[in-house]
Length: 313
Image (tube, rainbow, N blue to C red):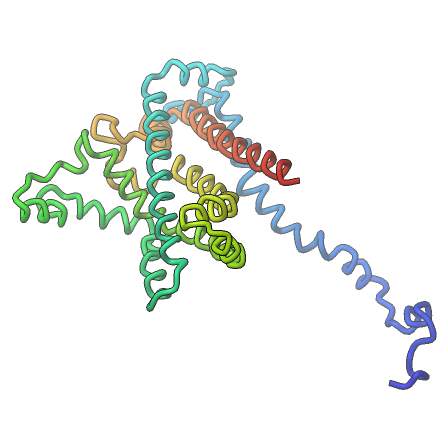
């Protein structure tokens, strides 16, 4: 380009630019708000409004047998504090959440360490391990219900072929642990994907430098892998815990909270209170309690995350 073709100054270049006045300029200035507006409206309608409406119902006596609703203040919450069935459901939900997240994390982390290495057909092996995550929850629950069948299930057949007596997998003694096993099978691929992404983000130069300094495999794992993968692992554990605590599909299809309330996790208890007993106000209070518990888990994570950021800073 010749010197004569260049604009003489930035001011001249500004004058040469096409003018975008009127409606075009208004849209250009407001385009970000216009693009965000449908999302904000969707969040308000789908998330915020049901949450506030549920909170309002939790302060009412609203039953399916009555056409009217009466404001009763915190009486539903007082009932929850004195209701042993609700506390039993909370306790079962805590066991279900902690056990399923713990075992899925251990399995996912072990497989992530394995799949982070180079070996033939690694891509195919990774895809195979992700299959349980891709299967819809209700389909997985139906398959496992057949596998747990005392007479015709494959697990009972394997035990009989070995000469052992198969336990009643969905009986009172084993039902909760059977649900935990299915939840671990369904959720460990999520931990695998998250942790594998974290492992692959660690620079290989750090391992090479540590090896030159004489660090063994365990020392490299303890000093490099664990600290650098910890933030990603915390996100995975938090999301898995929130998902497990309010998980409904697999427990409902396999046991519906039974037998004898052995698997009556808090989502099933809330469902039964609302749609079996028809006590919507009381069920709304139980749902608020479940929401507060999830909020507590998230708050602990955020507090821990802020502390780590401050320590690094």
